[in-house]
Length: 338
Image (cartoon, rainbow, N blue to C red):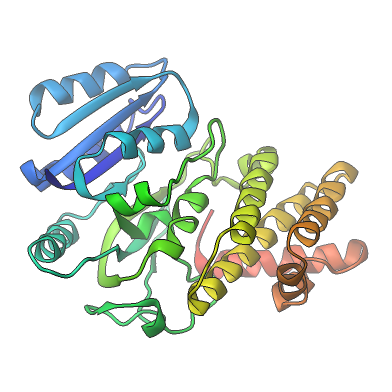
């Protein structure tokens, strides 16, 4: 059994997957690197096979018909043999020193009687051309270097949410919660982080800058123009999260509040991009999304709708929409995303 399984979803990734894989190889035989070639039409599959031939004890390759990022992650979960599971996108990489500290910490827990469900680390917005690289850290919300429960967490400020880049889950927990990401859909990383949370009993925050999240390609899914063009997929993901939150028994009050606040961010992001699109159809989709939330969970609707962010994204008229976009741009500058 491996200590850590790392899945790399790859679709036409020949130009950058090498850096990603090379950054993970120093994990050695304790790490299982699962490269999922998701129906690529370039040399991605051949490159993956060559890595497997060179490192047969470390690298596993899965070739499948194109199913999107979510189906690649699903394949990784189905085939993982590691105690813990991590997703690393093919255009990202990890920091070597932090990587070694992560493996040391996971090894420490595997060798103890204590069960760790989720390890959280910092990640870096590795934005192309940016002189200052924004680091997403969690020290305000989570005590560092300490195994805790949700009850020991503090308040998560807006924009300080646990994302796919920062999280390592226990593999059995992912299978226990039955997560199955939708095919042919972008932005499913939100579902990947969201749905296992009610099953997480123990957390550990290791404050190292482990994951380097690259931002800069014109065709990247988080590129603003791309997000607007794919807004229907963002809406689909948000609706699935709404349904999951409504249908799942979430006993811990802090987990429930955290997940509701995460939903608030998803509603705001979807609303902002629909406002930025600006056409009548997009504005109708925005209205329909809020009506969907109200129909599914009226209590959550009123809490989110009448929050500060909910109010700001539902200001009436053209001038109200301009104010909403202005607020988004300020947040964009502060956080450094897109």
